[in-house]
Length: 373
Image 1: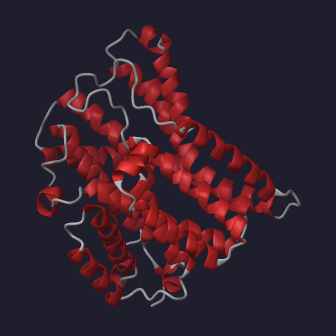
Image 2 (image 1 turned 45 degrees about the horizontal axis):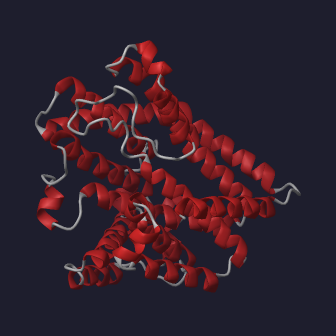
């Protein structure tokens, strides 16, 4: 079948796939936060090339590239796309940060509560994470944990997810939706991802380099969406990707990209299986699982100490699933619906949203260049 055939919501169960992938990240962090690193994680011990968490993040980016690119190509409305993405990401993130800073922080900090709230780092954590400048530290929190002082190590990828959205929309406007131009840009991105590490290190910081493969996976997902009428999604494609993975298994940079795309193709086929289609979750709690699990695991470790890692995973998965469900029902669902309605209202107005967006994107690009230099 063509990729286009599976992109209808009733023909795939990508909600379940996203929940599985988010659980992979939670699973991986259970080992890292319990032992101090992920070396004991079964997938890494077996493959020796990637962790379940790293693989999960890369698959997330691939799926995001596929779905959001298909969305903007189908609706052809920049304003609707931007507004819907904003209301998908930020309300739940804001709720997470408020609860972390004002409820979890005061309860677990080793500082007196008054000093905790007077400390500038408390407010820096809230504000910087809200505008996606990742900040990991709340004063006096988790200092004695194995993974010391790191409140929420999952949030750093949101910066690069949003950066991918900004770049995608910019290229869509500039290219006027031309598939030839967009494909050329994607090829250039993939080539840049394979630049020697010393060149990348001379230009970008460590976190950006870590995000290179996820962002490239996003670009490949976008490629699948742009060419959805041409790409056959079948066992032959999966077998070809698996063969490529075997050929490049010992070439780190190549396998870092090829393997997650191979597993992403597997999950796309999995999502269209008739039995899997019957397992459609009522609520998409994947985003909540992703942004909530790390801080919950840190809290559990703080009070229990090191325990059997499989029990640790089970306890933290259940707690995170409950919190994610509350997040979806109380925050995300309403925000998504509001964003959809607001986006439709603005998209039919005469306001030139695209021109304003390009000016803002150019300003952000200049700021980014200034930061790098």
